[in-house]
Image (cartoon, rainbow, N blue to C red; front, side, top):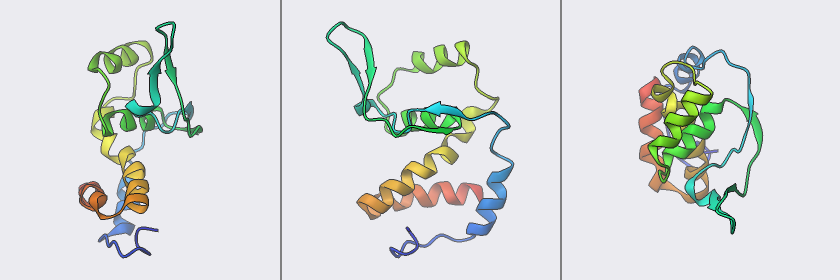
Length: 126
């Protein structure tokens, strides 16, 4: 879709080939799918609540990547998560890979202000 809208990226075939080995061997999990700080709230009883999901089965790292993409979460959350349900080694190094999907969505919906970030991630993996 981004290509159809006039955004160009070089070596897309190499990108696909290179990211294949980056994705860890781990079963898919049920994820929120749009987990940024705007979809996290505290209810009237002081309990955390997640809203507006885009639920799917995917890598857990996708939710973690989205949570890092737009900030707003305390680092202790990621430390506690990783202690409770450890992520695959080098998960932080893969955050840009998982963020690429969300950045492409934003590029297609909101335009060129996201192009340089998408291009940076693509260039990282080609």
